[in-house]
View 1 (tube, rainbow, N blue to C red):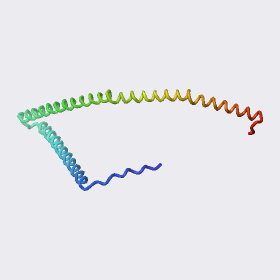
View 2 (spheres, rainbow, N blue to C red):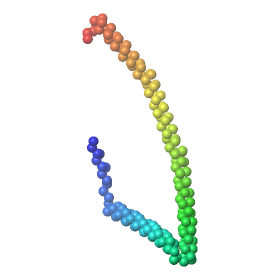
View 3 (cartoon, one colour):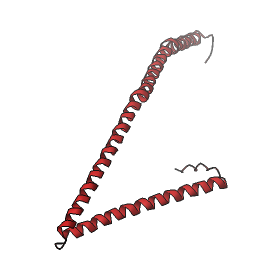
Length: 153
């Protein structure tokens, strides 16, 4: 089994190539920036845990770090709540799409299949069966003619 030839891609103009390179560069810069921010946050949390675990750490420092952690946790819970709200909105739009657009398409397809089934039955009863009967009568007539000797085989 051979693999089909890939569809040839149209040649890009120099302006399109430059725009594509620029978009890739911007995407790479965003990914690098987000990675650096995440790394700094993780490193800061690890550093804070190390400072908290040190028995020589003053109580004021522990209190401040605890307050910072509480603020971070509150912000994260707000972010998660916002993300859940967006998720619920997206799910409702998906359900709406399924009910109002996909279901009518499926219903129309079912109606079409039923219509085709009815057409096939109608053709079978009104076209195919009479042709089969006619062929049977013609074969019988041909055999009678052969038996009477009017026509040879």
